Length: 386
Image (cartoon, rainbow, N blue to C red; front, top):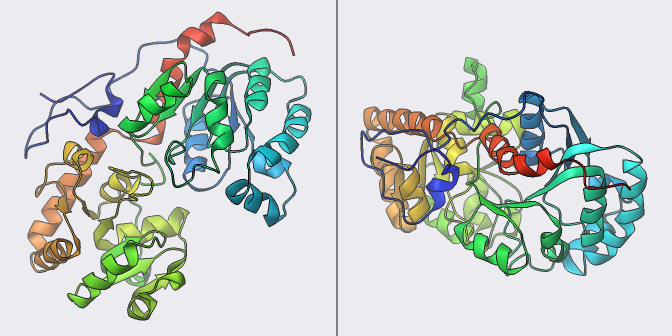
């Protein structure tokens, strides 16, 4: 019997047994404990784009009175703000943000502040949120504790002791967050969205536009160029979508397979849904053992062909619900075998979709889990005056 109930994060805990074909058990996301009838009011502090928008919309769908506040929009639109944040010091834009945040909050109160990303929020900004909100929660599905984006997330790490709950998506992040002073840490896997990643009816014209045999939807990273170039050399019919690919040294080989730049919303869903096989590449710079694609791809009905990892093996039965590979040649072998055996490919894709739905690693479950974790803080009432 598999893990259950409170183990929404079970799929990323290395100690779980691997799935076997036909094995069922309780969903990873079991119903939450009953709370008070009124849904807590939410101040959503984060961007209203990409997967962040999914989390905002999940609060709304679940009936929470939700007010969005985008920190980046409180600062000048100049690209120099982003360059300073990413490459010099986020402390400067963080200091500039504080008086603007105070003015935006005014005298309003909320039950819960959900901080999505939090790279611009200094400890003082989080304390300010605490004056207006009964509980303040951080969520970040990047890797703010690792080396790659360490500078960008300096504010975030410094502010960890000020949050009532810090939500992480990697097992290694749990101890790292606690070592930096996080008082309570929730481990929850990365998620797909309950609405954005449901398959939608596609006209024949739309399906022809987006159809592919093997698709990769994702940004360029240095290690990804050689990998995809090797697939092409092996004869894999690749369709490539994403930003930054013109920077790849392998661009001359990749260019004729390139279809479109960064995809979001319906365009992203169509590209995955219309692909017979979709590749799941991990970001080693982010120390990923799974990504949002790990659930989005099967949810949308494509076959997940992903890098083998303990987390992927915990999420899907290898060979019957997804296929995994160790390197580019192994990946090419898997793709070419499946493209030559449509009944097997379709059966794995269908079983993977069923498993992904059963796992319930979705935006709404993430939000329910977060709210459940801070019910005691919400019940205690406001901290004080501002």
